[in-house]
Length: 178
Image (tube, rainbow, N blue to C red; front, side):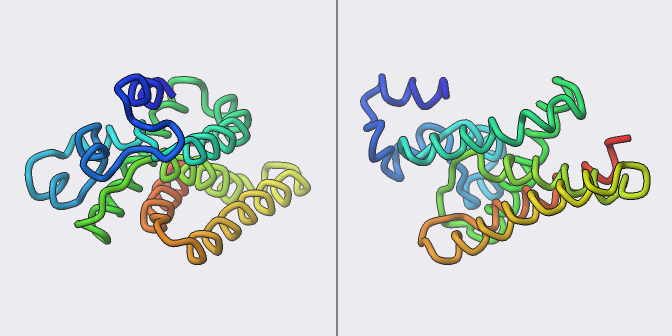
């Protein structure tokens, strides 16, 4: 949110968002730069850059919803670490699949949080109450399915970042949460 506000103060429209050159200036991810020009840091900075008020509004709303569950599950520091790692997985996937597209936003990391929930539910399916596992799996699965369908229907949505973040988060949920 702070980067979005700084961008608005710098003169970027908070409604329509930045142009592609402005996205690049503010740290958007572009595979040709992130992987081929020594600017790997873009895969991190793009997690904090958003493209207009609808983009950041939706990301913050969904982050608030899933964060209320995941943060108490793993603790504040691991929550931040997992968010960043899942986001980096999404950024890497985006860079590899769409090297010439500039991407930005928190959705790869957010998908990673849902991946953590799904991995956690799978790992603990025999020790958690069955209704809880069913609820976690159903709500996480519905979020993923809806957003994948939405991403296929709406041009400009970076599904590779979503899937990369989801996969990274799923592996974290399987491996890192006891």
